[in-house]
Image (cartoon, rainbow, N blue to C red; front, side, top):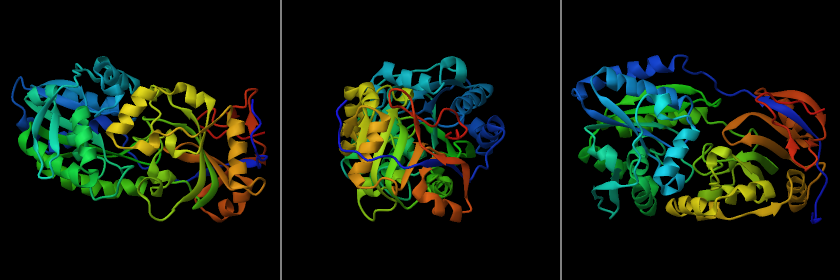
Length: 424
């Protein structure tokens, strides 16, 4: 292993931060009640074929949600089926998109409905900007479609409507062609415009918006009629932002992310956590000088989009990259910077030590280690952050201050389970 310039690691201790954890205890009952509230049954005629969208994100309880929607449709005389609605994800292939759904536990058995996957689309129309709007061919041929998606802050832009029902309508259901068009003409403007066109010209009869709390549990489930999609997205985005977890420090010399992945964020690592200035410029808040990412989730199937956000990574992550799949996703979404390969080091330990040299700090280094940008209730932080932790009533110290532990190959041993593991 090459000896690059490096500095010794500081000591670390575990912390836990208090995050909003209110959530729904009966997901199925809420889904059914919301569909009843908007009168979905009245929009379905006996024998109607009904497409239900399933996306490419790790949404809490998504298989339960989809199964309940399918059961509701069936109980009112419809014939439900699932369509993968994920733009160009899964390598923009039928097999790839089916595999993505299976990774999230979405199978014909788990949701109680057939899955009909295609990359074929129907063109619905053209916006004044020139952007063309597309819809999944199976969904377009159905008697009705129901859009299901999580509402949250987007990782590429800021606006009153970001990720939610509208995005799923024009990008998810638009497959690779729709995703490319929407990104090419500007997400902030095109998402609501393209969704409006699709809702006027296609067969969408309802939407089901989901909001997660900071612990990755469903906190809000709200159904919407097609005319309510835009307002629902606007209102729930405000509420979703109150749940968004953050790293509880404004400045770090180094942020260490144990895993990135498409099941964690569309950008692999959520820019809302690591700093939107890295994507769209502006004020450096939070100011994390360097980022180290250690591994890629298995659910990503080699799509390492977002690795380019980091400055340092490991040979282990690099070996998992499926470059064609990653490049297709990043080029479609115009996230070219997120495709760039950072400095590749042989082990977790070496990546951390070289990163410390890059920032010029060692024992006094301000460093936080997180599981992922989606899982921020428990962290390891360096000794230099002790006073800030002690002064923050939302933070609790877990375990003693000690050296980080690594295995024989230099792999970091920290997050072995959901519970913070005290470092001996």
